[in-house]
Amino acid sequence: MIDKTIESLQAAVADIHDGATVMIGGFGNAGMPAQLIDALIAQGARDLTIVNNNAGNGETGLAALLKAGQVRKIICSFPRQADSYVFDELYHAGKIELELTPQGNLAERIRAAGAGIGGFFTPTGYGTLLAEGKETRLIDGRHYVLEAPIHADFALIKALRGDRWGNLIYRMTARNFGPIMAMAAKCTIAQVSEIVPLGALDPEAIVTPGIFVQRVVQTAGKAKQEARA
Image 1: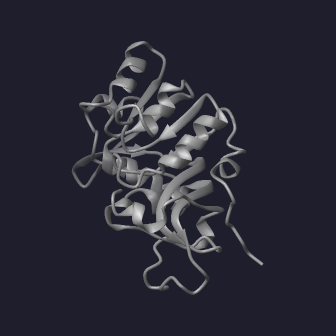
Image 2: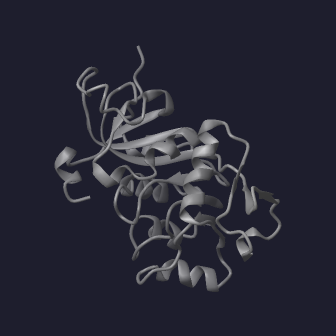
């Protein structure tokens, strides 16, 4: 019997190792798997490479992981905002490495990894510092930059509901990077508000099929909590 449910957040992240590349879903706080992040902080893995849309807000969630000193490098598209002071302090102190990637390129690099694509040419970033050291090509009179896929050891994502096979549905914009990150990681761990019986999810509504998910863990509060996320 296939059963990907995990009893606790701690057990779900127990084997994330030092030096791992970890994708973390979320667009700011929307769709961010905050409880999985807290479990990872408690677990203590260090020297991590984090792939995320931004670099944390305030001192919770991703920012708390950075503050704990567990992140060596972050790959993101939007590292600076009004409350990104944890990242700012670490970066200016030379304690964290940043790989800046335009948002569309970031999404496509993640998607390319999941789709088995070895790279792609994009006009975004051509002629800027972001293109330094990368192959460029003139195609139909337009300049392009070669971008590589981003693979991960683990992906931490948040969904609204899941079943024991790992099929997932999301709540509105909380979906964001979750589906493509699930495809691009060796091990996808999904934090859900509710685990439902097999057959309870409309097959037409399933966004991430269970083939891309290895672990599902239910968090406290169930679906009501999602209304505020």
